[in-house]
Every structure is written in C-alpha cells, then in structure tokens.
Amino acid sequence: MRKTIIAGNWKMNMDLEGGRALADGIKMGTLGMDLAAELRVILCPPAVLLHDLCNRLSECSIKVGGQTLHNKPSGAFTGEISGPMLRSVGCHYVIVGHSERRTMFAESDIEVCLKANAALDARLSPIICVGETITEREEGRVKEVLSRQVRKALEGIFDFGITDCVIAYEPVWAIGTGNTATPEQAQEAHRLIRDLLASIYNAEIAERVSIIYGGSVTPQNARDLFAQPDIDGALVGGASLRADSFLAIINATRP
Image (cartoon, rainbow, N blue to C red):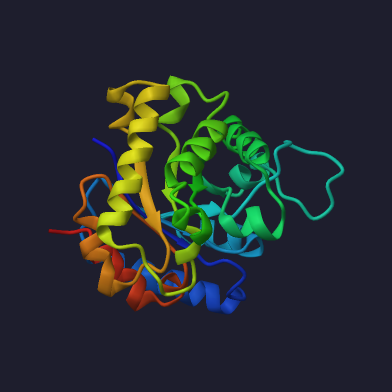
C-alpha cells in the first residue's frame, strides 16, 4: 500500500524562534491524531533550521526534509548543500525540481534528474516536482510536458529506487496564486503520471508510488482533492506556515 504524504514546504520563511514554535505546534497537534502507519507528515524548513528541527522532532513520527540539494556529494560549490549533509543532520526527504527552482534558478530537466539520483545515493527520498504552466495547459500540452519531465527526472532510477521516490504534481499556474486545480483536473494529471510510471516500470510498481498534489492547497479544498483515487496527499506551501491550517489539511486525509 502506498503512503499518504502531507509535506509542508516552508520556502524562505521562519527564523529559528518561529520555526521552533511552528514545529512544536504541529508536533503537539499530531500527537493526538493517532496517525496511521500509512500517513507520513514531512516538514521542509529552510536549511538553517534543519539540524535543530531534526533534533526537536526526533522522538515523534514527523520527518524532516530539505528544499533542494546539489547533485554532487561535496566540492567547491559555495552556498550549496549536499545530500550527505542533509542526511547527516537527520533528514529523510528532499524536494527536487520545484517550479520556483526551475524558473528562478534555471534548473533544467537534466539537473532535476541528477539531483533525484543524488538524493537516492544519499539515502534520501526525493519529492520530485513536475507541472505545466498556464500557457502549456491552454495549448493542450499537459501530457507532453508531464511526460517529458517525469521521464527525464527518472532516468537512472531503477525498479528498486522508484518506490523510494515521491512525485509531486504542481501545476505552475496554481502555486501561490490561490487558483487550485479542480479535483478532476488534478486527478487527470495524477492518473497520467501513474500511467507513465507503469510504462517506464510496470503497473505493480506504479501503484506503489505516492503521487501528491501541490498548488494552493488549503483546509477548504484538501478533502475534495484527497477523495480522488490517484491523489496520495499534498505538498503544501502557504498553508503549512500555520499549525492550525496544516493540521486541518492532515486531518482531511482521514475518513
């Protein structure tokens, strides 16, 4: 059975005091939830908070992830952070290929592939982000874009590695805009991605990979999204910066 995953991407928000308070609030809120074994909650704070929050959350079920990594394990790359570094402080996950990294920092499909493989080499589970722009959607190119991004990102990742990956469908036009994809639009894209996984690997493996949705997820729309058969959770941006809204999204996964 594939896991339901709720991941909070804090982006460039929260100082040490604020991050600790937010993590503590989420921790306390989840303690009373009786989280099922198949539900995974992940926090992805800025890099400067990772060590502290990994220690702070070490005795609960919440996992911590980085927001990006370099594709090399070490070297003269000023300002970068590597997979082994993330793993050494207690991270289990890392976001790879977020649209903000693709657009603002010119990360190509090839770079996303290298980073996904580097994450697995460091024993991290990559949360691999894919998604189309509004122009690509209006031109009817969703299938083309997702096929290219998924196939390129997974090059070099074999059967035994893909089940440690998470795919995040994040339509670029919905991220931070308040314009959430309808449950039907999101389900269509998730089904397309699962079918792609089946064609690259096989149907059994495709059914074991968690595919989550990102793009203005809120407590108000989460339950309708999670009711779709191929949506296995969410990568949450703005709503992850408040404990009450993030906990409400986690609660929306429950019947």
